[in-house]
Amino acid sequence: MPRFIPPPVLALIGLILFGDGAYVHAKAWLAQMLLERAFDKSIATGRPVKPWSWADTWPVARIEVKRIGSSAIVLEGASGQALAFGPGHIHQTAEVGERGVAVYAGHRDTHFRFLRDVAIGDVVDVTRSDGRRFRYRADASAVVRFDASGIDPTTRDAELVLATCWPFDAVTSGPERYVLHAILIAADE
Image 1 (spheres, rainbow, N blue to C red):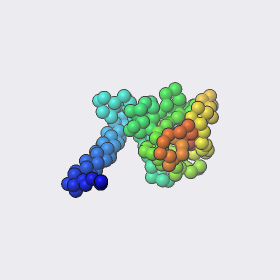
Image 2: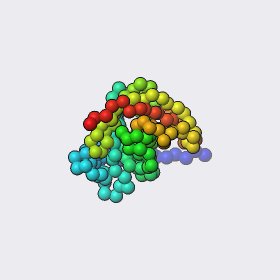
Image 3: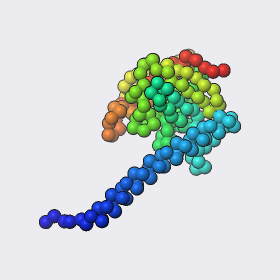
Image 4: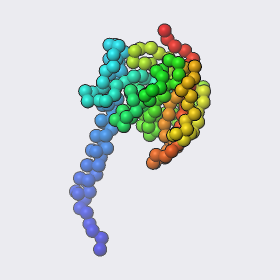
C-alpha cells in the first residue's frame, strides 16, 4: 500500500535541500573572495597571508588563461583542505619562473574545470605572491596514470604542469590524470 507524504513535508524537505545547496555555493564564493584578498595582501606585504586564521595553506600564485577567461588562485600544498578551495602547488616542485617543473594540481570538477578548454598554444599567465609575473605557452598534454606522470624534475628549463583527474566528466575518481605542460616564454623583471 503506497504511503502519502503531505505536501508541506515535501516542501520543507525541498527547502532544506535548497538551503544546503545554497550554503555550499555561498561558502565557495566567500572563500574565493577571501583567497583573492589574501593574495592581494601577500603581493602588497611581500609575505604569505592566510585567507582565514585556521587555514593550513596560503595563496602562492594566480594563474590566468585569458583566451577562455579563466583564472584560479593557487594555494601552497595539496592537502585535502587546500584542494577544496583551489589548486595546490605540489611540494618539492620548482617555484613558477625558476628552473625545473612547477606542478599545480586541482580538482577537475571545480577549480581546474577550465583545463578541458585550454588548447595547445594557449598562453598561461602566472603571477606569484611576490608580484613577479611569468608567461607560459601550453605545448603538450597527455593522459597518464597517477604514478607515471612522465614529468622530468631534472629539466634545465622553467616549465609548468597543470594536472587534474581524468576523464573530465567522470563521476568517480580513477587512476588517470590529465597533464597540461607549458614552457616559459616571458618573465617580467
